Image 1 (cartoon, rainbow, N blue to C red):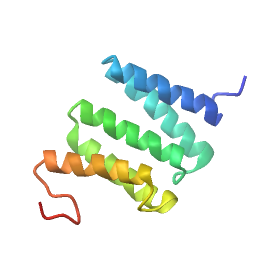
Image 2: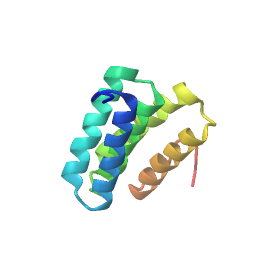
Image 3: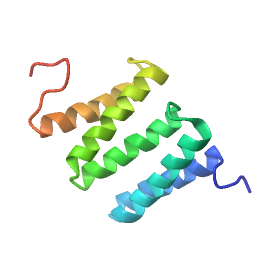
Image 4: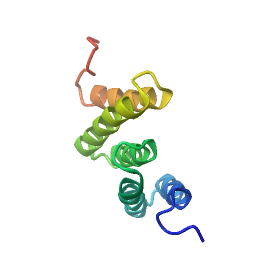
Length: 116
């Protein structure tokens, strides 16, 4: 009814991807997440928070699948975009930055701006 690229439809696609990931169906989850990401970017632009949420979701999926460098790159992309779109102190930016920092620590690297 709304169309395949309507933001509400894309939210449903993203939610379905999350359920698939939770159930361990990683390939299907990745496909759905990439579908939502591409459509969000096409419809809303590369700096829109909903598109960045799809980037973050894909990073989280790669993290779960132990594709750590891909996860790290996507977390960084999402943090940079959220900083621009929402500001450095927004809770969504902070949450994404924490995922990035956690991934860096797990890889034995120090998050930017820290010494521990």
